[in-house]
Amino acid sequence: MSADVLSDDFKSRLHLTTKTVGQERIRRALENNEDVAILSMFLPNATAERENKKFCCVMKDQCLLGDPKKTIAGTKKMEYKTRQWHEKCFCCVVCKKAIGTKSFIPREQEIYCTGCYENKFSTRCVKCNKIITQDGVTYKHEPWHRECFTCTHCNNSLAGERFTSRDEKPYCSECFGELFAKRCTACSKPITGIGGTRFISFEDRHWHNNCFQCAYCKVSLVGKGFITVEQDVICPECAKQKIV
Ligand SMILES: [Zn+2]
Ligand SMILES: [Zn+2]
Ligand SMILES: [Zn+2]
Ligand SMILES: [Zn+2]
Ligand SMILES: [Zn+2]
Ligand SMILES: [Zn+2]
Image (cartoon, rainbow, N blue to C red; front, side, top):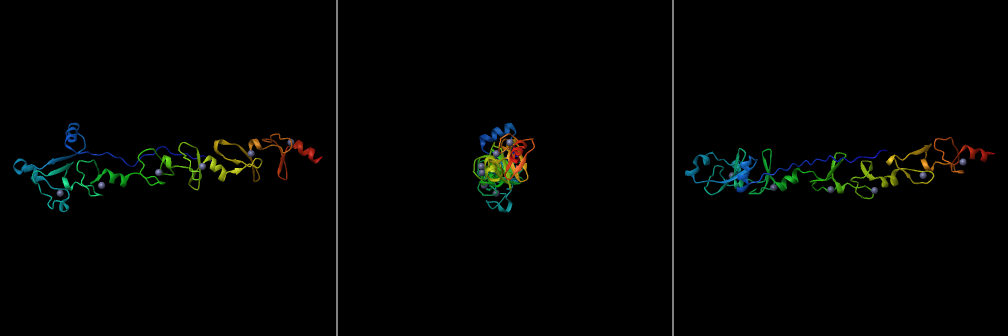
């Protein structure tokens, strides 16, 4: 029986790097060479003829404007890396809401709003099923909120505590002792292995080191010869006197 260790090296599977759009943000982003989407407006053909001709909404035949080549002056377009959308077509792949000037997260070829991305990709606690954003722990390779990781029996938090598991379930040392440990023949309190408690076993009986003493003179029998008489253990001296 050994104490279990709660792993602290929890790493969220959610790596949220949001990309933000918006004029002021774009200006700063371009200056700093950041990874952002750029929202701009179609200009009248004469001014931006070449640019407008190149435009093709990524949504293709699912373009919400009905034509991926539409470049009506005054409407907005979104550019992200090499791809372009009509502003209206730049939507979260899950909830289909337009991203507008909100943050989004690109993943492979898809665009997610932050809420949907969190729902889909973040780590959830095996106990409460809510997202773990920080302060998670893993136990048997499964993620838990620190506060959700509690003793199976008394429900006290085990974070930072020593605990022992049985049948894949964690128990605080007290409960484990009460529920599963061997009991001392003399004092009938549990003998837990936690904290390196030493104990004596003889046949199918067990004693705390301190409790292993002669039934008559109470001398410690640890490391000494002893004699058992029915339920008692007694030292050789007392045994001699009893027999005589
Ligand atoms: Zn479109
Ligand atoms: Zn969404
Ligand atoms: Zn939880
Ligand atoms: Zn407990
Ligand atoms: Zn005892
Ligand atoms: Zn004795």
